[in-house]
Amino acid sequence: MHRERSITLTAISILVDILIVVSSFFIASHLRSNLPMDGQLLSFAGSNGWFLLTFLFLLVGSNYLHGFYTFGRTMTRGEILTQTIQSTVIVLVCMTLIVFAFKVEHLSRLFVAIFGLTYAFSAIVAKIILKSVTGRLQSKGYNVSNVLVIGTGRQAKYLIDHISTQSDLGYKIIGCVDVEKAMVGESVKGIPILGTVEQLDDLIVQNQVDEVFFAMPVHLVDNVQELIWSCEEVGIRFSLMTDFIQPSIAMTSVRYFLGIPVLTFSTTPSAVGQLLIKTLFDRIMAAVGIIILFPVFFCISIAIKLSSRGPILFVQKRSGLNGRIFNFYKFRTMVENAEDLRSELEELNEMNGPVFKIANDPRVTTLGRFLRKTSLDELPQLFNVFTGDMSLVGPRPPIPKEVEKYERWQRRRLSMRPGITCIWQVSGRNEIDFDEWMKLDLKYIDNWSLKLDFVILLKTLPVVLTGRGAS
Picture 1 (tube, rainbow, N blue to C red):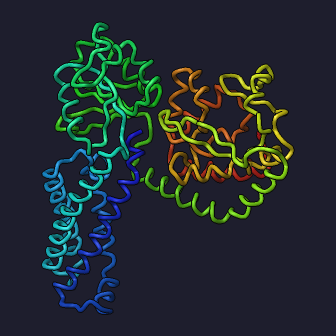
Picture 2: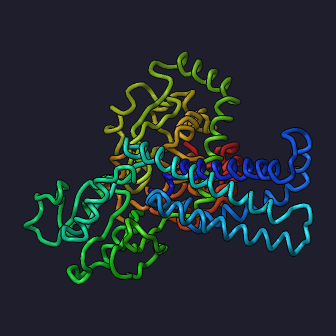
Picture 3: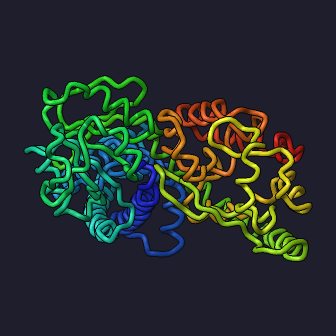
């Protein structure tokens, strides 16, 4: 999900705005009131902190509505210039009305004007520099979104030309899809045609696709609605570059991409502010947890090493956001050759679906049973959270081989960053069958909020302490 992966850049952009606003306030105070850069200036700032905070609150809201914190990466320098001026003027007018309404005599119109001009000039320069820096990072592969283009005609070629020549946008076209079977295997502007529209279901499963762009006349495809449903079923964003189509469950948003009006259908959370808080909370809490629990990490590591042969950590490939593969960490709780023994135990599997679970797995060591019962084996996943592969709360990351056996509707659980705990963990874990587990994960995605995350975290504590559902 591309917007989720832009959280870090959004945080930087908001932080830059805060620094510029504070700096502009002090500069305007110094120039207008001839206050020296000492305690008098700080006293003036303290007594007028309401003005600073109100301006900042209105500004962040205005910049959000102007797209600086959402799809600002596609803005041209001219758009940055005009929209920064528009945003600043709107907020200044509001602040001027507030000053007049409350008859704040010690804040003159000249002070407000100097403050506004200082901020606008500084913000324009800073945002252009920030766009250049982030663009350079994106051109080197950071925060890149994989795109599949439906179409090979004029609209598709226009899209390919602009994305290919503007690597700083952070988009990578991995292939095209056409209506004609004879076109499969050919290329458009150097981009391979991977299949037909009838094969879209398989193409978005077989490739790590973050977004599908429909870039062809609607009348050439009979089942555009089904294409949208196909993408939203597995949680992949679908952007339509032509007519409006009504999705079944996806949220619709309108934006301009390279000057083209685009309708976007997304089934995943898009509240940038809340997602930013979630990401910051994850990273901070993971770092704090690693530091505080270091003695526990050390003791468990020694115990594992002394109790059985094998490595301390169990490292396994797992499927993360939209199928991205990452190294998943747990304390080892099984014998050294546990994976080799799995085939001999398949018939004992107690879970339906592709998941393998045995209540009294003979491969688990004595210490391992204790670690599993107390969920201490999960602690190394704090490193996964800190590096951004996982979140504290989110659907559990599956094994890639399990994902291959998913039904289409079950793949949508990959559309949100995986977590250490989720609704499944606080609802009985292994006491719940596979289909119900998948439905709980989709329920979490469809109803996600910061409040829900905190509720799940609070409910996780007693589940861990009692060991309910653990094996």
